[in-house]
Length: 284
Image 1 (cartoon, rainbow, N blue to C red):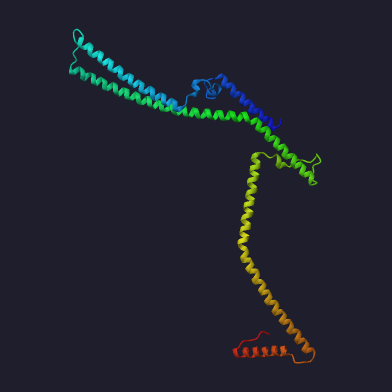
Image 2 (image 1 turned 60 degrees about the horizontal axis):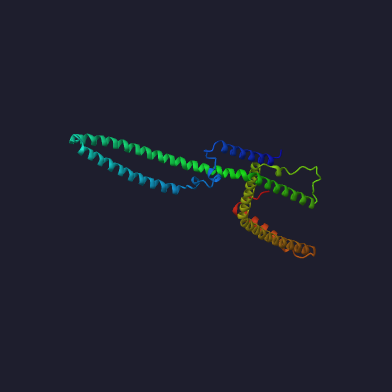
């Protein structure tokens, strides 16, 4: 089975599995009930509307609590007056009641703090669940569109292979049907990225070598120019010496006076005199 068909089948199987889980677990985060039932009023709730409702009910219960306490206090006060015998509350009773109320207030405060902490944890969990819900929806959308994208990519790959084959045939190097394909065309993504990385590293090394040679080029140019000047000087001296030797040979052949030979003998005599004066022994 081709790799494309296998990938498409795996994506479709995974999508079917997720949808089966949605049907088996209606309260799961992978069950998008809001999108399945857009007419449900509960699906129209939003964080802002929930916050408004929460503030409304909080104010309402605060007012009801105040009304309840006021009514109960009035009822107790009236009963204590009209009762037979009337209920008389002493200072000790008030002190004991205040102590009891202080303990109850401490307990209530601790419970409120625990409740607030629990609410904060629930909000954090709710945000995490909402994030996972969005991720699941995005994943389902990807799985839903993945088979079609794989088919399009495979068609594009086939078209590119066909273009390559046509260009090879146009260049006279068409395959006869028995030649093996270029192994680089069948490389995996990881191997292709590794080969591309290696090629880029080689190109970078070549660029650095070219830059180094370009930096050395001015100095090499100066050395070449200096060598050319020295060569010109040597050639000029060679030409002068050659012309002098030719002239001396011509004069000697004609029986004339050899100024060069006489000059050489004079230099040799002067050297002998100087060596004698300085006490330098000549090598035999």
